Length: 386
Image (cartoon, rainbow, N blue to C red; front, side):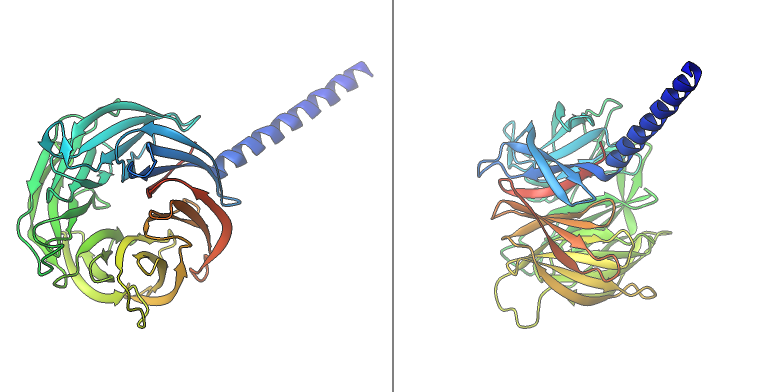
């Protein structure tokens, strides 16, 4: 009887252990940290973090993850060990420059540990990204009108820049395009090219990127020209690597371009409005993102305060409007689709709220989840798996 009892006890213990292990694994697979970049002019102190449950869409446990000035845009390295933030200011240590701050991520608590900070090379850096190896950080300096590359050391800290390119020229909009305004830069999927959108020049500037030393050289052809006065802001590449979608801030449109990965050439295919035909107010667009399934595209309107949803033609890659959805706040900046493709989170800058929407994976449409949190001047959202 004692032998049977011990066996029964061991079996029950193993079953309980297996259940606990599976429960913990399931919880980990559905739980994420969400880091929020902000402007620190309306009560914010820097970068905040939340826990996000991809089963329920719930955001909880806000904390100040790191105190830093105007961390408006964030980037996570491919290993998810480090976070990089622009410091969107016009003066950095008496230079006409902003900064870039590097942090180590504690993936148990979500806390960020400051590593170092370097000058971005131009005033008002507004976008930061990593190359596909995670060894280089790329930054677009809006007011400076230039782009730069910084090596990231093994410990995540930044070294002095390995590349710097100043853009030159202007566009037809005298108020917003009086000079170059680099607004976005990322490397292509194969890491052979870096593409920068310049709002002031109405151009997507194409560089050959050397991942061995982090340098940029002009491509041939060196850029793709968009419609005059369009003001290209951000770019999203289709998962097939053959299409690029550009959100044009000044004309509230999306441009579709084909992309030739052999020579880095971009060719226009379509331009479509992000606004209803009967809208007559002021509007500028902000963010663009594709659903992970490659079937839908989302774009944010500031003024109309909505997310425009488009269906992507599976053969041509062109867009067809599905509908507009209120962001339940004012001035939606960045938004982000969670890694499961089930939820879309919108950062409404001027109302200080982040709103969670459920995504219908079959239709692309959004619906309210009832989930909303307050955070001062949210601008950018990034997911990290604990």
